[in-house]
Length: 348
Image (cartoon, rainbow, N blue to C red; front, top):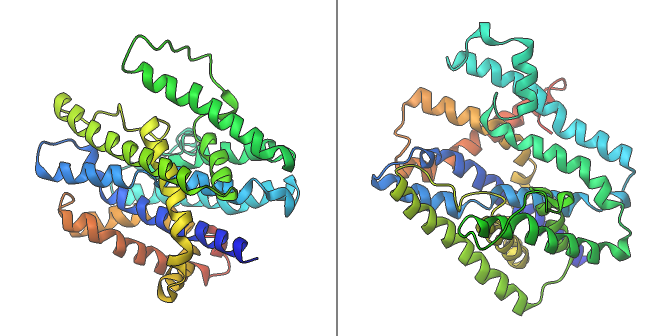
């Protein structure tokens, strides 16, 4: 029971840290406007340092949901996903349309049925940060297939598709960017475990399996290599090209995968000690109830604050401190909405 509680608390801590990292990444949006000025150097460091956020969300999804059959059937699983994510996504996308009109980023006469449908399917064209929902829904649809693997065979099957998937879908394509000596055929991939599905399966493995100390050390070394490959490689290639170079910057590339796995393992390892500190545990438990709502709201709140205050977005003080205020505002808004019976389900 104690081990189960510790694992649950480690996921809770990861969830809150990943949520904060996402808000920091978006407050650091100046990274995508390349410049040789000093601000871009710090923006690059912040971007690389917090790049684990989205992969960790998908690993958390796998850790939480791949064992859903122990709690309910597939029909219930899918209904719960629709209620928790699909309905809020649609609702807040419409709010996003209204917000964009108010911010003069969208003309009312451009809001057609086609625009709405296309925007909802594309994910990020209405609210930029909502691109995340399409791969998330794909993961939800795949989870019943992965979870159908018998429990006693699950570890070996998941290890197999993770290793082969990393080799065919990640390592070989990444190496092929740099040399013609590595042949790459896009048709020769493990499609069952492509893109963010890789993180879903790996998340379950990392969460449920005990990792020996020597293996953790190897994981941490690879994570550091992944972090600095992204950070330093992106810096020098961007300086060379005069624009943000994405060679090392991608959620499904080797540097990010190594780094995100290392962060996940580290948080799992240190979570029990961190959560033993009462005031930290109280904050984490409280914020954990608001993480999804913050994700839904924070982009609009961030853009509204920037528009109203005309703050200098490249200011390091702004990029380091504003996310705390943005999260606080989002939590306050969510708290109020949840008090309204008709609306409480749009911020689960």
